[in-house]
Length: 308
Image 1 (cartoon, one colour):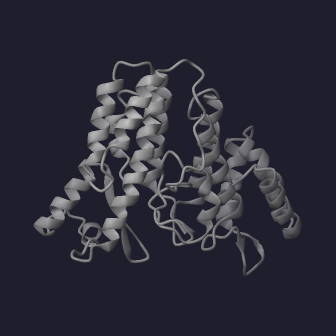
Image 2 (image 1 turned 180 degrees about the horizontal axis):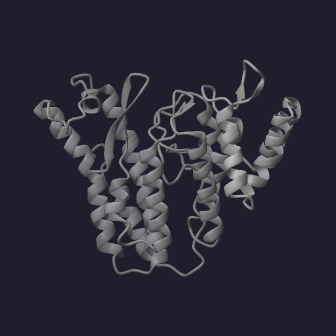
């Protein structure tokens, strides 16, 4: 399973893999592999400048966390006065480097046994009781867009998306700004841990609809494909559940009250959405206790790539 399971920009197709244990602090997707490529904006953009930035990032170190700030400063220098399509495209170039650096920093972190990094999570009083070395490490992480996370007793390094809002939201398009803000919101709320949801099923349903509506609102934006993939990923979890947050109550062989509440919530609040149109027949079959047909419907959705 992936070592980090965080909301990032480039990895929206991994939600199917989220049904099992994985490191996570956040949402539905997130692996560092580039499984989904953002669609190109339709307007003309500055290819030459994008190439310059890409080559610049290739020359940066992948073992020093401060290089994220170096890369962000260069982004500001190159793109602060450029058209928004160019700015948005350059953001994805940065994000690819950000993910690469995250993986490298996490590898270094995993090999370091000299400090008790779990103290960064257990000391909740503004890190008042940390050693000077740990305090400095925490400050370096925060400044450069990273944070310590923990799963099953092990710490690891993930991305702190406040960094993206600080450096990129003032420059990217309004659509991308909204996109980044939502990624950060979902990341802070969390998603799953140890094969179980850490948010309510109603919250998951609301998040699913949000991504559907965002993709539909901006169909030609560079974010459209990724937003759709987030929607499909969350929708898949909403329909299939997770190992430790199952849709079915195995004792009485009926749909769990939490999922029943969430599906009813979608029907009442978002009746005209694709999300509801996909959930409704499945929900009906579960209420009829026709588990076989319900499972067959899920398989059809998967084959047709309606859900991930």
